[in-house]
Image (tube, rainbow, N blue to C red):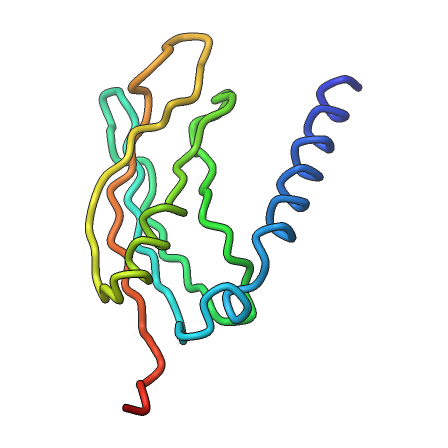
Length: 128
């Protein structure tokens, strides 16, 4: 029962964080859409864990923290918030990079997962 309560509390916190982040249309009115391509890797004999594409629209939350996909990872994930905000500030259209999960596992403390990403942002045409 404690596990179920912990999970419910984590999900409620995540929901609150999404609402606190606001909508893309409110935070970044110049953005029409964002596409995030992510490739998840794990340590082990089969390193490729998952390939994922996330489409973010003006009606989506401006929340860019992705969970670690390794079962049992506590406090980990991949926070792309500063990357996206920096891109929008500089009006960058495409950016590639990689992040390591900083979460904890029973078997390994660090370096158990990483993600490579490519973020594409489309902007409204400026009326200059």
